Length: 319
Image (cartoon, rainbow, N blue to C red; front, side, top):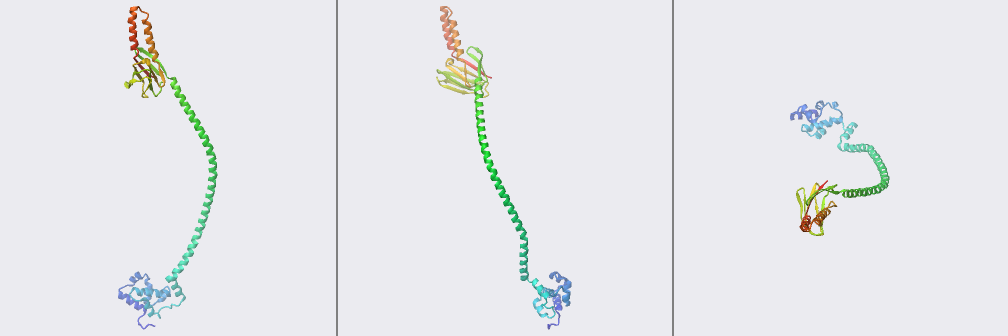
């Protein structure tokens, strides 16, 4: 029994008042209900939830008002419920941090294992299903690839043969069309006036290339669309090539030595030498039928005509 004349409740009340705390202040600080605080101060420990809470609340109360809780419990141990009861022991074990922590770890481990069992089982099932699908897909893919390789080889060979045949046919048609177009090109004389002759070239090719060849040096001028394309002397037995624009509608050739010059357009020969020879022959025949004095003058004239006929002005219109 404590030699102190005050009860533990009175001691706590005096300390609270000395601190200037009300019961409401103490309730807010300790989180202990006000009725339990009043029961402690009045010594009515039976009003508290249990024997364990008597000591726990008193210790917390004491520490809040500036007293040593453990020392106070030892001093008034005779006034307090026994610590040997089973309820107290159980509650102490329950509230003991180390005991509670160990028990919680065991419980948590068991709960964790229980939670993981269905998850692991589900994962195993999913993995098994995925492996089965993968195996089935792999086998199907291998079978399909084997079939496709055989089919693709056949298709490739057939396709190559067909493509080669198609290319050959296309080339043949193109060559035939080109040859046909050149062969269809033709010249027709439209008019002749002095040394000027006009021709029409039907079925003229799109690419119009003029080739000039002379057996003797000859001066040649080439004009297209009012623009001089070439002017100069073509050396004997040499070929001069002049390319006209694709949209050219005509070309004019000025030949300084027409009888010795050969012209081809797009591979088609232009018949100019025959017309020149005919003009010269006709002039000579007419002059030979006149009298002696006249013959002399006409021969001179024929010679002059022959010299003039060397120069030809030829225009070719493309159709």
